[in-house]
Amino acid sequence: MSPDQAPVIALAGVRKTYDTGAIAVEALRGVDIRIEHGEYVAVIGPSGSGKSTLMHILGCLDVPTEGHYELAGRDVSDLDEVDLAGIRNAEIGFVFQQFNLLPDMTAVRNVALPLVYAGIGAAEREQRARRALERVGLADRGDHRPGELSGGQQQRVAVARALVTEPSLILADEPTGNLDSRSSADVLGLFRELHETGRTLVLITHDQEVADAADRVLSIYDGAIRDDRRNAVGVRA
Ligand code: ADP
Ligand code: MG
Image (cartoon, rainbow, N blue to C red; front, side, top):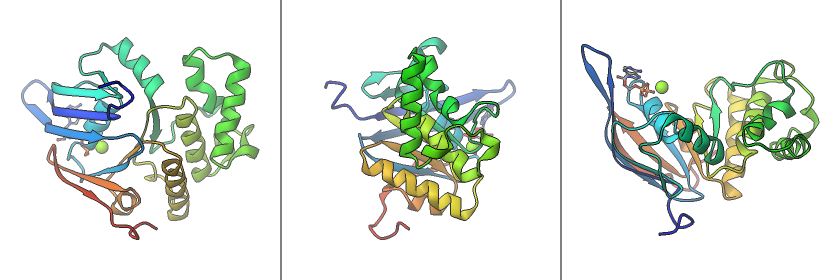
């Protein structure tokens, strides 16, 4: 199968054990997940169920103890830190609960940062960052610093940063966790728009309302996927 036809995410028999000395914690206990291009998927589970562990593996921030992970057709189960960093930058756009914007940089410079690591020249970086900001409805805020923006706007900047490299996957970890209900709805509306333009999105959340915004919901419980269902049309806000 060529990489073009491969699913964006294929996890097979993934286990993750944290060995903390006295006792080993099995945070993932045999996870199989397949996500195709253009899918909009939420992963929901209670605290301690393994969401962050799964997010770290999906995001190439960590590797499984056992099992395999293919990202966009490439086996990334056993890569070293340098190769993982390269894959992360090329294939994945991250959105975090805490926005993770650099406070001393303007929105444009924050959005352009992944392009610095990708070795793209300054003029093209600026142009692409401004285009990404336009895409999230913040064309007029490019020269503002994060502290001059609302929480919802800061998360939009973070989404622009996640988009700017045109990644195979946008991976969001509790993206509305720090937002009021109006800004949450706003950011979820933006995710829906991105989905409609063909992006592959995975949202990790403990919040049922956030999960309801996706097309497909995987429920994780005690380190295993317990349910995989499609949201009915009309559930979404
Ligand atoms: P969630 O994000 O759903 O709250 P986590 O993936 O953070 O779940 O944690 C799953 C399990 O793994 C929990 O029992 C947690 O205590 C344990 N765990 C997570 N990270 C570590 C770690 N670095 N060392 C040891 N145990 C960990
Ligand atoms: Mg967590």
